[in-house]
Image 1 (tube, rainbow, N blue to C red):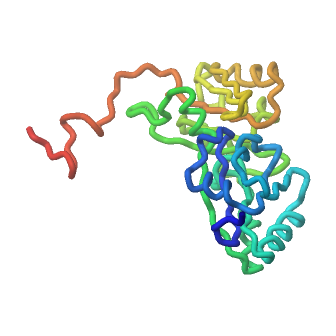
Image 2 (cartoon, helix red, strand yellow):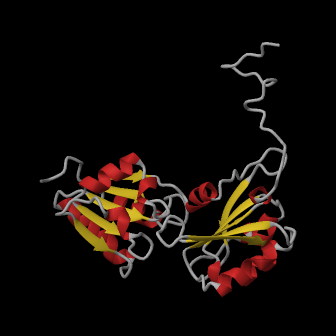
Image 3 (cartoon, rainbow, N blue to C red):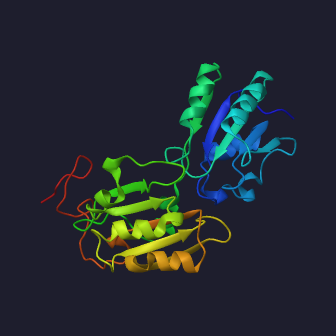
Length: 259
């Protein structure tokens, strides 16, 4: 039976891998779509477990942009609804800008559905808050220059490390020694690091180590992709600092000071 959603491209962030972390909107669209194009090397099969039995599932791991976009356009012109499924959240390293530009040029309607990012899922698994009052109040999401992307000089990892904030490092496993060297220019060697492999997948693994062991753990476990690093004093810091948000001395519009 045909679905009731409109014939347009839904660009969806599938989250880190756990199907239960899909947004309700993403789940509903995926379960109704006629066609789903998905990055099979980055998205586990369980994300697609509730698709229609007659839905066309198209793997894109071996396809180029020049193949993917015309395929989506052709399906829309046939009156079908299309899901373009990316891992994680669309705002981070998802390579959707060029897809949206080409769809817009072809006058193909599209909609973006955000997803959970791996750093959020990892922090939840670690049962930690990455912004602790009087300890760290900033989160930096970044990567290191590699084959697929050149990071602007102003965003060099060493300069970002100078803030000693909670830093979430993506796409760096192949360059872990270089990354560790840059981080150690500003973070103390005993700064805690969570090495997070395939967060949300069935074979997920997380190691909590000191910064000076980050590269060693990566190499010993042959982690070359799908690895996220969380570098933050908040990971193991024992603090008695309390947020002012729910403090009895803190008043706001909905809770006037009774003192």
